[in-house]
Image 1 (cartoon, helix red, strand yellow):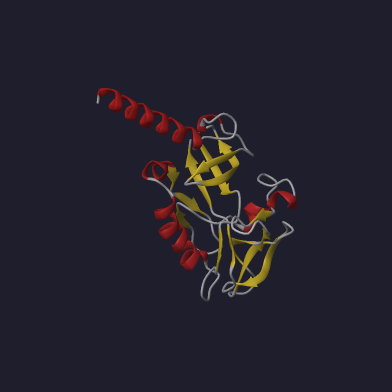
Image 2: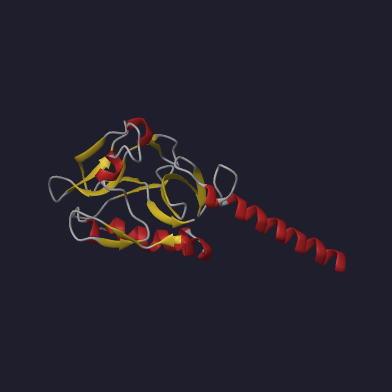
Length: 195
């Protein structure tokens, strides 16, 4: 009986060690050593590191388009959008473990309208177009996690009319005014993570 308990305890320790390593980066498993461009696992999703600030926090973006959904039923206002409510509600609640949620930073998000406080958000058109995060259009191209096909994805910035929102097209080009907010577009969440 003691031998069985020891085997079970060892299996639990090994399982925990594996789980912690799996949440690390592609450069050795330690979140403390992540660098821009690394891919880390969080909530069983692969995330690409867009920026690391002072070795203490990182801006990460899902490596793939995770699903498709409308931005909103009628408006391109990020603050009141359906997609914002979903990302900070159902998506956040069901995707991350308690320990992972402890590492996610509620961030001040600058918007064209009112600024918001979000744990999960979409990049802005300025973020997506910035050479700080993407060297070229090719780096913005994303595959749909379910189909493997190239997919366009929503940004949180408004388009030129209240019924359009900005997006990244399948060729990686940032469009400020392309699709109606009621269209099913790709969801590629971003968040700030404590390292």
